[in-house]
Image (cartoon, rainbow, N blue to C red; front, side):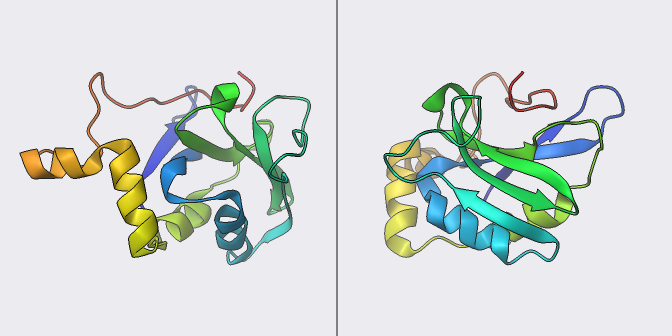
Amino acid sequence: MKTYPVFENRAGDKVAFEIESAYVGMSTVAGILMTVPGVTDVQVRRRFGGWLDDCQGVHGRFRYQGVEGVVWEPFGDSSRYWIGQKDSTEPVDFSDLEQAFVAYQPSLCRRFLGDLLTLSWFRRKRGGPPTSRPGGSRARTAGYGT
């Protein structure tokens, strides 16, 4: 699965990453998180339940190396899930988490549906990279609510 790193401006540390929501559901995200050593207390929002945090768009919570993390969908209707630290006061390297998502391969049906929704099949046919977007990457600053 393709991931999109999010860097903290001050030190240039990777504090989070994004994944395309068309390729995974929240139960799959929770399952991937639980395979990573050091991840505990994984909670996901129920399909029609309320948000898990004060900030709208939080679909999941977990602890990684003692630091609270979130799975956040910016604006509540984004095409990506932002996975990172809730607060950036104690920077933690999320590379192991990101590698677990990179290693994940969606089922053929889910991949077809995801490619159809994100128009990846069209970009591949034209010869462009499957994840290229006009205007470059969508890097955000640290902190899911900012």
